[in-house]
Image 1 (cartoon, rainbow, N blue to C red):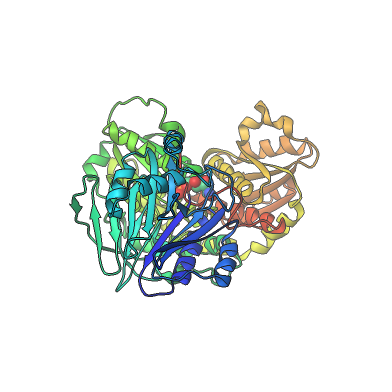
Image 2 (image 1 turned 90 degrees about the vertical axis):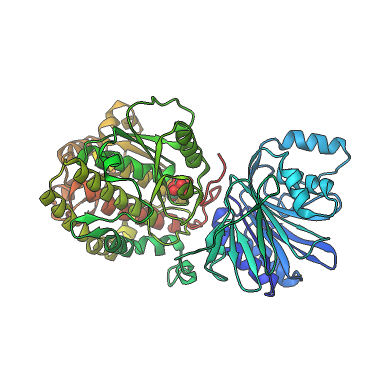
Length: 608
Ligand code: AGP
């Protein structure tokens, strides 16, 4: 949440900061701002609302200078307003600070600063950092930052500039992400790599408790004791081109359409004949994995839904007992420590604060951690014992789509690999399943070619106020995901439910015309689903059915039917998710919603 960027070099500071902020806008869009140092003064432009507002201000009154910092905000402390926008400055306008995270003890720090006659212009927690640094400043920005951060509690990534030291940006990371891009005669910092890619592919990822002094031709790192830290540069694989929208009106639609290729690429990377290659960061030994007593999956939102599907896969294929928990719950419960469990963290961004906290909690109990992550080098990937990358390319739309289907794919592969190690599936069963996986991209394309059909159904239901999504077995989590997709981008209320549970309460919500999306593909629970749909129909619900091609029964039963190609039950969530994503997308577009930047949300949720 919140994106920060900073640049020092010869390029035009306005365009570099703005381009970086556009890339980071998905992290928050309540306000934005930039600052530079010019002729011994800190110069700030900031404004409430979308980035477009800042762009307008900068075209009328650009910044000058060769150093600058920028921020795009997801409001935590203080409403979205011009004053609460970052950068924040101290009383004397000596330093400007941008911040991603939360200062938990800001209230007591503010009280102390007020007693010492500091005056505040905003309601943000960030402003206390600017005042502290200014108060501690003698003639060394690095030292005043180190001194000030020792007072802070919470999570934060900050970038600071100072009017008296126009040749450096000082950055510090604790809990929120911060990456340094190394260029030629220029250096850049940002909350994530997407903002660096236009300038360089050489990056240094900062760790918690590290401070960086970023100059035009030099970057240096220090620990809390002001001792130098040596850090390695890494090359990133993503290209700047992959960050565009192409011919699509929204990132979300582009990313939905990328899914067959993401799966195709993953098949090529990770399946070798009858063997699996889960990547060089997956370094658990076969023996370790074969001896697992159980798996505990913890994740948030869409990633939690993927984990829920994973539970069915691990239990069915590998016969490994699997618990699934929402990270913010997992963290505060007291799980029983027995056997040799594996804790899995599933996350697109690799920075979700709740998932990271869950991971650290598990690590503190000496449990082994495997993460499934999309963003290379992200905090969760770095702090895990092993990582399987999603290899889905950058996902910009706030609603997760291609990362979700890739998570399902990785979970499927991992469950087959575990089944192989534990001999719960034999070689010929595995090769049959690999054949089925290889047929997926074509089937996914086939679904996407029928997008118009989904759009037509979306048109019929665009004014509905309440939706119910139902499924059973491995497609119960698909129902949860379908409902989440719809509510987060259309702001229409939707609930996902296990179909068999409807009669225990929720069916009371059903009346004439209530829209219900029912996942009734061919499976071991197909007949049960048919009965559940009948129960809804007899109460005059309008049922939109996702079914399997060639099934004529559901044609008679559903008010609207969308067919997906035939596939096995355990692979079906990958195919089922596509019409659900398209349904949510089209309803949101028809309701004129900002699909890629839904209100109150941010792509990377770095606060707990
Ligand atoms: C997905 O559409 C959501 N925006 C959200 O639920 C997301 O999946 C969740 O915040 C977890 O993010 P992560 O995968 O980056 O950890």
